[in-house]
Length: 233
Image (cartoon, rainbow, N blue to C red; front, top):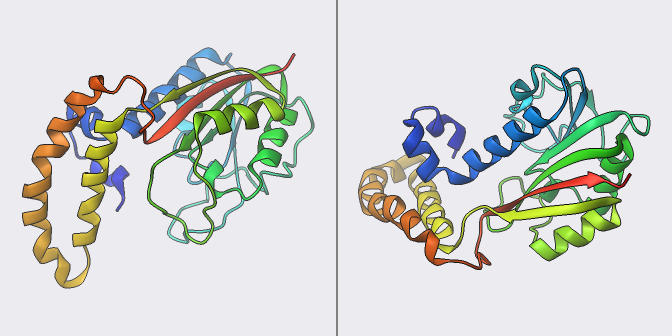
């Protein structure tokens, strides 16, 4: 199910309510763009279809990916095709780097983060967004899910400091999103017959549950994490 297509048709307030994870990603990328000086080089390591490139109109954006997995993706916007564990750039080349929901598809995440660190200037900013509870989307090239503690370990080992790791929602937003994902079982062939009844059944809890998310203070149940860190000076 292509949630980007759904998102484009929703009113903004409803989109933020239902597709909280996507909106949290966009907000984090927008903050990184706003904090990065004009003209600075920005590396998107795991850029995919370069859907976040437009945030960096004032900077020099460089999208890199290995171009593997889903053949339906459009990789024509990439600036380089490369293995993220062996980036084809000189050390200290970029002022900022982002990796958005792509670390799960890298078999050696520690090596990839070390390469991002190497490519950044000292003090350069990293935005890392990872999945914690999400369905497998790109089998068999999908390897990991991450916890807060595992992320902190990987970031510190890779040469980053001052990591800030924030969960994207808690138990009730996670539960609402799981129910929304359930609609994908009613697509294709004869199963479309059941889509409307399933949508009618699932829509009320999908809309109501996010309002209860304030009850989950620990947020050990979460869709993923937004992480920011700096390369050690």
